[in-house]
View 1 (spheres, rainbow, N blue to C red):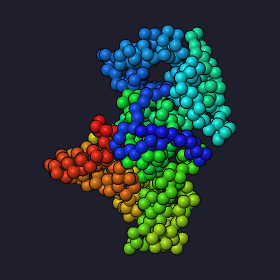
View 2 (tube, helix red, strand yellow):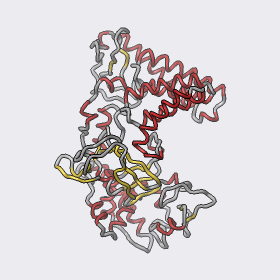
View 3 (cartoon, rainbow, N blue to C red):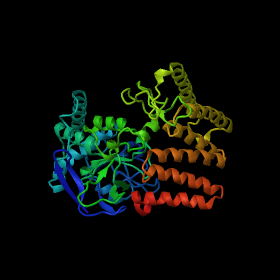
View 4 (tube, rainbow, N blue to C red):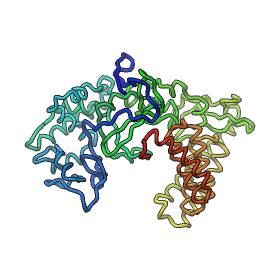
Length: 466
């Protein structure tokens, strides 16, 4: 199913060798090198990344730093053998995960002469595009890792230079191993470099998805792909999660390229402006205003907005804020109040399952006031409104008020559907939440309809395990 081609603009990239049907498994592979993140060491096998049970797990014979699901995994770990470079040595826990993974890669490459290893050695580093301060920091980290490796008598002992190269390759080609339903970086289980997956080029609206069974990666087509077309994965936030200017900024900073995918070509269009826009000052107009000035996070957008993306005028009627400065001042004042109240409510709901009813009631009142302000001043598809409605849905579900929870959950789904492609997992998971709430209330046909639509999407991404 796979082929690869090279061009001056795109470099090496994976393409479909023949026509691919949506949902098809494209390839399955194990990582060339991987590292279980330290917060999961007691719950996951250090080799295969599958869950371990306290009463059936196996420890390294020489140190307490790692656990395994079986004797086989224990015996296969090259870094926790007798005098292994990490065995009993705290550096592998103290150094950042990317540095430890890079050290493992460099050590393996110093001994491995396979074609797979030769491919890994040719992966992009973006050395020339890396700023001097960042390169200095990474060089010091690589030197420290090399010194730590040499503390053990047994080899291999990769050089600081080879670790630095691997570290740059990890930053460019590494993948976070995550569970099926994940929301942010805190969900990450491991960091890994995969031989075939390292050839995937980026799109903010990808046509393939990867999922993990332990450390085994499975790539599937999420839409039909014609022979010769590129197979594209998303390196960061997908369309719908962030507006185009912010996605492009993140990609430029980490991966050193300006994205020109189909989503970015559409640009900062009306649907994206709605994600961060304020209501038009004319109550009869359905347009939104994107501020002309830089705007802190939490006022009209989840992320801070740079000052170069908006005009300060409505995208429909073209009425501008500078025509009514008193109104614009009152809008910002109210949104600052909403931001403060939302933060207060979140602090009260730090662990929602253990919060007293009195506290839940107080947080609900705060969020209702936030919602009132946001409804008055933000566009109906604004991400902040969806965020507030999601919190209200969770509170009402916790209190057993299923009707209100359903009301707010449906509002969140409407906002997500305005921003994300319909084949997105974000849409599907929100549909499942709504289905669960409908089912509790006995609305079986509606619940079945939502769950079936969600499962169709999730099967494209995760197959029958969805």
